[in-house]
Length: 329
Image (cartoon, rainbow, N blue to C red; front, side):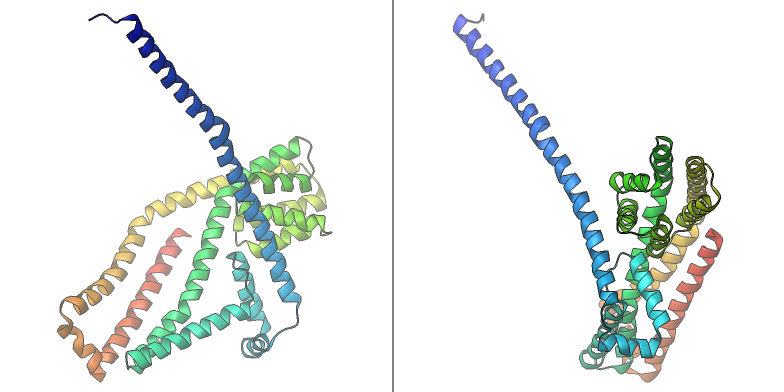
């Protein structure tokens, strides 16, 4: 059936309206939504860097303040060297708290675990086990955060060294190249370089700011970079070419470590299964058939067997981890 003139104009108007709506939606998306997303991303990065700098400043202010009573007590019990080492580990994990406060949380968690096991479960042995578990958890979290930061930092090292090399070849000085790294790279590389640049603005030398960065990041690749810069400042040389060589070495090391982790994946996953399956079987039997494991809680022999089994499991997990780490290194 042929279209009438009215129907033709009606269809044309509808088509034009549809095209106009699509063009308007596309324009809104490209001109408003996309720039807004980019601004939010940039603002988020700037906020993270400012917060990072603010936390470091707060930590420095806290360390310069007069020691409170629990800090003095911990100094007398553990020694200032151990507390300073713990403070360094916390910096390397991006935990901006005083080491005395961290240990206070550990003691509070252990005390709470002991009270839970003793009062609620009515068993002193379980009280000690829960206290030990809750006391170890903060250190496990500290180690996990520190390892995660180091892993991210080392993954960014090759790109950072190449960007630094290009900046030096373009005529930038080393401090301005570090500033560029702080602006262009994401955390943790960007935030650490930003802190190093801010320290130089407040009067520290490049060497001192980079040595301070070594206290905040546990990375062998960063030590190569800092050593190269320190030697170059003493003896001279082409720093841009040196950065390119460091980028090549770091990238080769990362590729080699990835291959080794691939080869040891079977051992790591086997160790995880051997550790997790007995624990899951124990709790599964407690739910499905609690009468089979009731004797472990009611008799002194059962409690002793449970304690020995737990210690053996922890020892086995530690040995398996050390074996895998020895193969990887």
